[in-house]
Length: 562
Image (tube, rainbow, N blue to C red):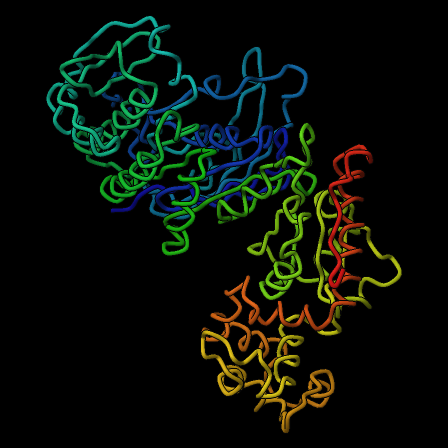
């Protein structure tokens, strides 16, 4: 059976959003971001695209209701507080892409803010499913339930009365079962309420709706929404699926319940042809959705709205590690009464991050850093971001580039850039260093039994492709003479990622960690790096975070050999 699905919103302009594309998962989309990045606005925009009062395909009225009696639509006033000053006609333009289940075709439209009555409101224009000669300014037919932050209004402060909703009364076991699954508990009763908010909760025989927590109430409202779509599917022969929008879906739910919620939603999406779009700040919920998106890329989407790089941008399918680095400004105790921010440190690749970790070993200064090995960009990308004045990179973080970036950095010498020691990229540097160690060097007498023959096995492709013979290697010369068909950088990366070699790298505190061994034998180069890093960190603290210079006494590196 064909189903209606929202595919993409392209927001040309609306409040903080300018030229922003939001792509939705077939089942679940989780949106997160800093305050003021318009997370809830995206939910509101999505809600305004649809109406469920008329089947335009059959030209017939639709009178279906949710379990608690509400319609399958939401008014713009429920999620938009219209500003008389800023929300004027022409201030909103949103391009819509979806699949329309009634015509079983991909469709497009626009959502614009237009004057209707006393104040502006969002209006759908240019609906591509409308036949020629008819009014194209109409919504798409599709049932929507919008669970706004209003649902979190404290139970004790609500005006309400107990009521038996007919459908709930006949399906109480289903409601209780789903609630118990979500909250991992054993409730046996269910009670419906109406008034300020129409709701339902599952509870035990030793307490009732008066005593439930905010999380239990939130769970009940979400389950009630799912069952309302089930009711609609049973009653409506031309059912084409539905759209469930949830603002702050994790509210009041403990971590296990948050994961359970996504599992239940995924199952119900399959059974009821639902699409769920939610906002959340929960690391548990976001990371679970991200993991699912890596396995089921069409079903799940995680969307992070960031204003770190200037205007609001969409970061598609970011993990919580990536989001957390951007969303949190962390502080660390520097002394008895002083705290300093943790400064993000970016790298070109994992090899560079490993090298940096070894350089920071036993350095007290490292507690003021927040290395981000999962976020990797090329040298030119970082330099472009710095050149464009993107604050995160030009003022508030340190970018550790490979030493071969010296020419690209040039005379500009950005204050947030520090070059790693050595004269080669880290993977090439460590290969050359280890290849040139004699078989009798103490380094090869390690607890892992990883001797020089093991190394040459790990590096077999490098040795073969670059025709490296004898006991000494000159990587720069070998690369210059290379005439093979593969990219030299990729060959070295494959060596570095070799599983056996990675076991050696993972032993960060051991003397036979290859980076630690290199550092001990190249102390002058390492000390030069440490001094430059200390200088850069002091500059970021004072310039990017406005830390008084007198508070930076804790930022002191310990030089090798001292």
